[in-house]
Image (cartoon, rainbow, N blue to C red; front, top):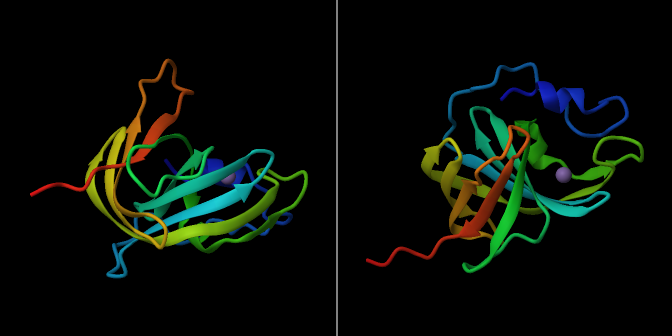
Length: 160
Ligand SMILES: [Mn+2]
């Protein structure tokens, strides 16, 4: 995925959201760790946007209900277009009439460690303020190519 869709959906003259930077995607990993962020987005429907740094961009999912701090709760997570890495620091108001109009605030932020990376499957160790520990993202079987439904949930800690 590239940031073409991200750019196409937005008018950066009207929205305060960050435009994609000129710097090429796929920058070398830095020692600060991979970015993890969840933004609470009070748009037409309140949702939480989960984002994980991968290949110099932010993989992104919209989670319609509050993400679970504990195991035992599975949340639907609908994959959306990759976002520019700079989006991780974004908070503000997207004006009326623009894509995603409403307020965006950072709900949780930190770093993560990838434990399993396959197409349709991510297991990550989150180090945020609210969410900590191992989480899975599992893509549900798609009926057609427009289906981007995943499940997001916390895994039980491994017993030794
Ligand atoms: Mn959103």
